[in-house]
Image 1: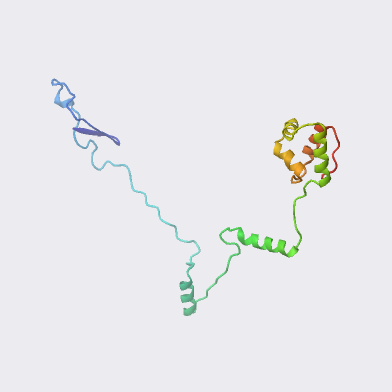
Image 2: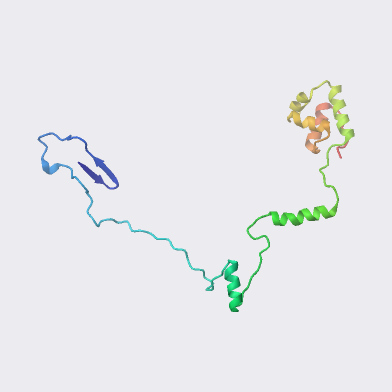
Amino acid sequence: RGWEVGWLKFSVQANIFPADFPASHAMPSGVALVQGSNDWAPVVWQKSVPKTGSKASKSASEVNAARRVGQAVETEKKFGGGGNSSVSMTSTAKKLDENGEIFRHATVSHEFKQALQQARLAKKVSQAALATAINEKSSVINEYESGKAIPKGDIINKLNRALGVRLPKAK
């Protein structure tokens, strides 16, 4: 025994109706929906035809066949077509190579890193303690003392205030 409601299908394994239950009130067995009352219609998507009117062929064999017949064939190569940025980067890299100059970020000077280290040691403060005093990571202090850091004015001002000295220009 089974019945369907909408898209749900229920089935009964055992007779759960009492013996005195009238047969006219029993649930229908089989398909409860009337055939042909399906409101769903199939939807078919089709690719639209190009609006230009002429079919553009992309394969080399079709272009060569059109040339043999004598038809006018227009071909153009798009610069950087497909959006790959490596094509435009080649010209930038070539310009940099032709220039011959070495481009590097300005780092702190030797005088600055020596003065920072001497001021920190004079106060008897570790790199970690100085870093927490100026609300920076200890790796920032390490980079400044090793000469690898790119100088930032706000960090240099914090170092000046925390150490109570005037550090030389970072250059």
